[in-house]
Every structure is written in structure tokens, then in C-alpha cells.
Image 1 (cartoon, rainbow, N blue to C red):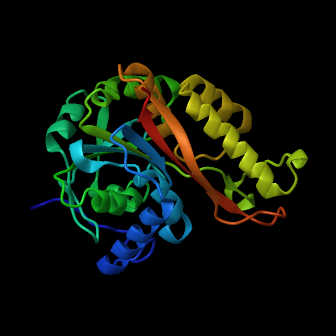
Image 2 (cartoon, rainbow, N blue to C red):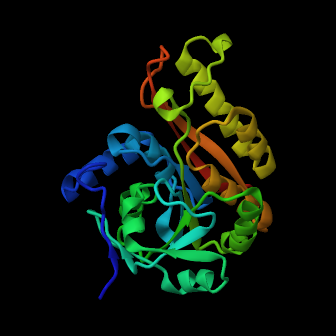
Length: 291
């Protein structure tokens, strides 16, 4: 039986209509005004429903020049399934309304052989939205190019394991045929997220959230995973992709290629003005060869 991961969130988190989705993605990508660059080797992009973060995500995906890339590693956080490790897929293809993406079975097996990864069941795979929300953009940008994907579900890792996976995956960064798509939203603010940090000196709540997120973004741009860890310990900002971002920072620290992360776009789902409000922040970044 062919193990296909269905586009489980199509029809709810984004449209399942291929023509409509194609049109939306196209419109968002064009509206960024961002030029494709072969020097961009990775991105950080949000994973909320497209009506919330589709526009912001385009600022990352628009950077991708698909010409020489043959493999995309996806690193996404686990929202529903607890594991202290990273997990690989059992599927052989990931389906999207705008084209299917085959799994790179060779690299998947190579990673499994290290003994450091677990395998996730198909129902766990399909229930998780963090990587799925990147797939239509990848299918769109790589349309007509033979690309394979390596999805890695990043669990609730401790600092040692973030560093260990970063070292293990670093060699893949040095192959220019590889690309990295890191999935994360930023601050989840409000009592429903049990997070209501507010620095009144910043003015209204949404300005305080913005300042907090930008502080985190600036720390990520330094490329220092330990500084990012200290920032998270101090402010506890509810960045849901903290573990994938940390692993990516360790990868960049341990590879030979000099790559710098730069944020391009920042948005909030709404502007919080009272303690009854809530919002989620979205930020898009490109990881570029530092020449």
C-alpha cells in the first residue's frame, strides 16, 4: 500500500480548491516584491491558517530560487503529540491540492539509521499542521522542478538534544542542493494562551508584543542558540517553533557554510488593546549565504 500523507487541513486551514489555492499563493508571492535568490538556503515562516498568515509566509517563500535545489528539509514543532526527540515520517509522499511532494526515502533512512529519531504514525503526521502549512508553498515554488522533501517533527527537546540534532544535521547545510524550511509562529498572547506579558512603557499591548517579538527576532539574527535560549528563559515568549528554530541555529553554527538569518516581514493576527484580547504574531525570515 502506498503510504500517502493526506492534506488533512485542506478545506479548513486553507482552501482545498486547487485553482483557488494556486491563485492565492501566486497573488501573495507576487505582492511581496521579493526577488528569488540562489543565496537563500533556508527560511523561517509561520504556519497558521492562510487567512491569518498566508500573506506573511509569502515573504519567506518568495526568496526561493528552485533551480539548483533538489531536497527540502522541513522542521516543524509538534503541537499534539509529545516526544522528547525528533520524529521522521512513515509516508512516502505528502499530498497537497497543488501537487504531491515525494519523501526523500534515502535521506529519511540515513537519518533513521543514526538511532536518534523515532518514526511517527500516519495519524500523528496528518494531525500536525506545522509542516503541512508550508507544503502548498513548496509545491508551488518548485512546480516543474524534481524536488523531494525530508519532514522532521521536532519534539520537546532539551538544550542538549537541540545541540545534538543541530550537529547531526549540519552536514546537510553544506550541500547546496539542500534547502531548509523552519516552521514557527511567534508570540501567542492572551489569557487563552496563558501568556499576558505586558511592558506598559511600550504603549498599547500590541506594541509591547511587537517589541518582545522583535527582541527575539534580533537574537535569532545573531545566530547564537545560547542567546536565544536565554531570551526564552527570561521572557518565556510563546514562540511555538522554539525547538525547530534552536535546532536550525545549532545547524548553522556547526556547518562550514557561513549563513545569516534576516527577518523580512512581521505581522499580528489582530492588535491587542485590552487584557481580554488575544493575538498570534507571524514573522518571516530568510537564511542567506553571507558573502
